[in-house]
Amino acid sequence: MYLKVTVKQRLIVFHDPSQWSEIFQRIQQEFGKGMLVRARISRELGFVPRHHKGIVPNDSVYMQAYCATHHYAEQVHLDFFSDSAQSWFQLRYL
Image 1 (cartoon, rainbow, N blue to C red):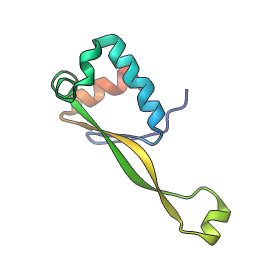
Image 2 (image 1 turned 180 degrees about the vertical axis):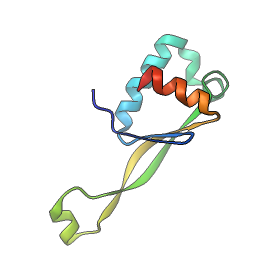
Image 3 (image 1 turned 90 degrees about the vertical axis):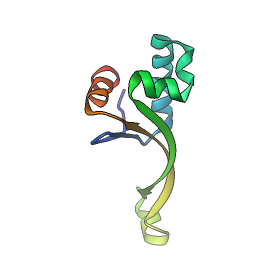
């Protein structure tokens, strides 16, 4: 499976929200349904997921020629509290 993500310091951006959904289902299977509670994810896994509308460039040449060169798209951002939590997440799920 090809993941379309951007990894920055203490931030991982899923450009396709369905890819985050698959990983989140794995987290629920491994850690239980309690991971649906935002505070528990924060406390136990060291990050907070948030839904975001990010600006992305248009892929189509036609769109770039006749329309705006960027548009808004749904994304999921994972904000990490520590570098170690982010490293653990990357090794385990990416």
